Image 1: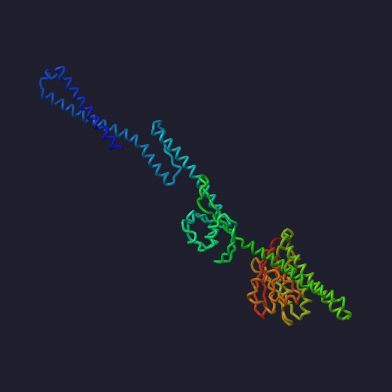
Image 2 (image 1 turned 45 degrees about the vertical axis):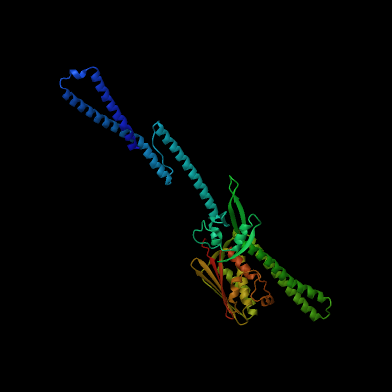
Length: 466
């Protein structure tokens, strides 16, 4: 701009100087001033010297004026360029400090207004973007958005976790990332009812999937498909557990009821008193078994729905375990099993329910006695371990196969169903133990070897308040 302005003004200046000299000479000739000058050569030399000096002065003055004026014009333009570059690099808070009222000042004001509007727009877009990503990242459901060419535009962490996707997969073809033909079928049958698919990569999952067409809000033109993946594994597992529980309860109730009904009907036709007594004993045993089963079901239901922590109190483990010893001593003696309780002298306390703790201990000790042959032993140990109390129930019984240990605390799960029923077990004792420990914020671990015995280790947090 400086060069263009100089080369534009320079010819005008030259023309003005030459034209001025020409008029000066014309005036001299018109009024005969040449004839009054004695030394024409000296006049011409002085004239040329004057003309050259005037020319140089005019050029210098014009150049200085152009440079000064040009810098005055270029300064806000340079500022505009610098601020525009910074805004383009993301510094949206930058503004031009120029307060003149000319066209440059108006341009600066308009530029600042544009920058302010742009900053507000960018902030609004970033805010909406952050909210969108925050929502997507916190969702438990997997979300994938693909364009019309089925390239991934957006994917949230839940979807990446479901399909074990690593790294950046944006703008990649979805079937290249998720190699499953069922995804293609779901995309093909979009806007239909949800479809359930089973995924068994890192772990088994049941996924409810739905594909939804997405249209541009302004043009209503379809721009892609949104895939939503809802993990229903827990729901399906709970439904199966509920179904299994109902089936097991029905079966467990049906077995003693069938025996009671059968022997009761047979009694009508039995004349022999000894046989009648035998049948009545069987009915009594089955009725007791039925009563135990119903009581265990009610206890389990109560543990699941009642908030026992409201009425928690300070419970002395030493005293409670001593009471369990006196309760179970008679049962152990009847089966010729040595019952040994090794309790620390230091008083240990927990925050819990005394009756439920005793019920848990009775269930575990009773199980140990039931599955220990005559002449064996059951040992209960209470020790302090830092901020926890450890209770170990160890027997020399028949043991439990390793493959059964993970399911040992499930409802109605029995290692040997026939033997468990013959001993009067309901299959709910260990499930009750687990629920009581959950209420106490405790933990139970089990170790076992066939024909060598089983060891249950209970860990409970100690209570230190007076």
